[in-house]
Image (cartoon, rainbow, N blue to C red):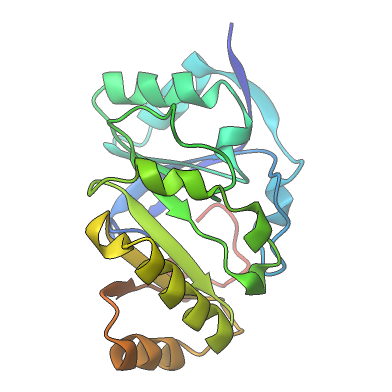
Length: 214
């Protein structure tokens, strides 16, 4: 029986995708292969409990919400996650996957909306980007840049241009909380003309920034 190590399952407001603002059930898997310097979910590196896929499905069903996000940590680090996403899709859920972008998305069910980070240099993890993932992106996916400074923003612009990302899928840009003023990132986007959707981590403005399970 397939088991996954789950950090938490909770009901909150989706905050960092084209679905931002909608109620969503989050399934957070344990473990991450990256160590971004600004990471705000370090508690998911090791904390968690083993759950069967049936147990996870029952927990998700309690919230009576049809939008589910599979996140981490890095959810693709656990092989059983692919079966979980298929089960969720087969059960009629609209499924989002939040991935750090260092592991191939090639085997992710095509019904899943994949939110793929491209790590900027300010994260300390830019060398871990799996650039082949760009070839799999479609208009039903999102690509996300988390920007720690102006250098990150300029680097992201170069990547967007080089890979013609605006033709592949929606582009999201978010400031690192507490590092970049939202007004600064908004200004850079407007000045550059890049067709990116400005995003904030909504849960950090609705609840206290360190609150878990939201």
